Image (cartoon, rainbow, N blue to C red):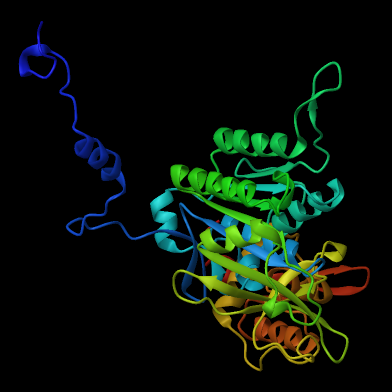
Length: 398
């Protein structure tokens, strides 16, 4: 009888026990001779990158502490791909690294999953994002998909027997959407609704490992929103809820928290803090809710915020280059001529993010002095109108 171990048998040689162990370990052994690639990040704030592609991230906070507004900022920053002047004005310093855009070869595709809010509020998130990107509020874009899973129920057979609980159905739908839509970033608000018991260690570990596997396999980042344990007055020390929060904290590349504060004069501010990171620490950023888009409520990052900053001057000087960029966008989006009040509201507030009346007046005066705008011969309802000068229009690449 022919020995299966002989080279001429036509069968693969049988591995020894040690050889089999080595074969099992080899994919996981690092080699110091290999130059492993530098990671890519979906975002940077003030030049510091975060949200690694191929990893998972966490966003936490107490209830009603601005987490959805932080999601809005991340969605808009990714979708705009640094091209929206509104994003530049309202999300100061928050952007996609140029290196990442070159690597992807396209503007990022986004999947936002909402398991918590009413349908109307989820739609408001979409419209806030559209506004920040400079799109029509009801514009649909193939790169921006929203999966609304709040009302998902158990899967049952004809006799009412539960075949699959609702949290598993939700997770299946999320995985199908990722497979079909191929997003570069996924934001799940909230992860609590895709697990049966967030205090069950085995379930928590399994879910987090599944998310890590998906992120690594598809080289995407997956953000997970989870509430903090209630600890009034000590948000900085609060932890994410349950064993799920512990597992997330152990495995994510970044953990951010949104903290709401009521200032002495009654103004409400939100601060985004990075509590854990595997790379460089990201600076805190503070934002307010602007009424530039009416009752939508637009998150606006503010520099060196003080309780009076919403009413005091937003700087004593003007940025000529920014003003010209705002006018270039306004030339495409609005009808001209327009009244001075419309100029302040549309060009300076909506596009430029300048809400202070004194600062608006300085920019309006500068626009005249720099020959960017001039008085129009047309009047509307008795108001003097302004229009873009031929000198400025000649510089614009229409």
